[in-house]
Image 1 (cartoon, rainbow, N blue to C red):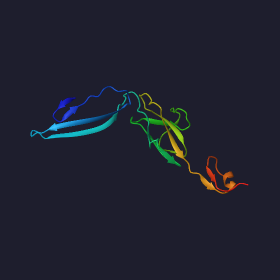
Image 2 (image 1 turned 60 degrees about the vertical axis):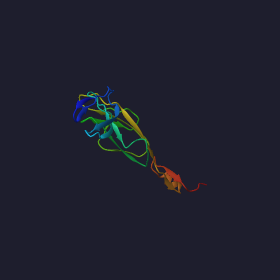
Image 3 (image 1 turned 120 degrees about the vertical axis):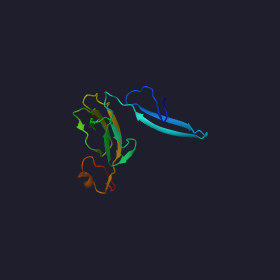
Image 4 (image 1 turned 30 degrees about the vertical axis):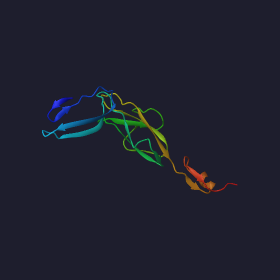
Length: 161
């Protein structure tokens, strides 16, 4: 730590690109009358890269289970980067769908995404699997099931003879 007066500088160890560093700073000050005051500040920061685009972030979290649909937003900390994504399990390239607005998932799916920017290395591929449980439509007739749309889920409440 270096500094004087009201400003002090901390130098952290060297970290790999895109590492999240958590920190806690505790400051103690004493007045001329001997009154001691303590303050604590916690935070975190992500180590950026000057040569590689930051990884794609996903929102909301993929750790929850969603009902019927979920709208997933993608972002990157690198200014002017373009995000490309897939939902079919393949790795994204610049020929994949370009992200422009939230992706609506209507069932469990995996999104893979990459961010690219001129003059920088592409971000690492990042992926999240979203668990989306689709409610079943209750029906008492087999004819409803026969005329339904492929992929629809039904709960048959009638009886078959």
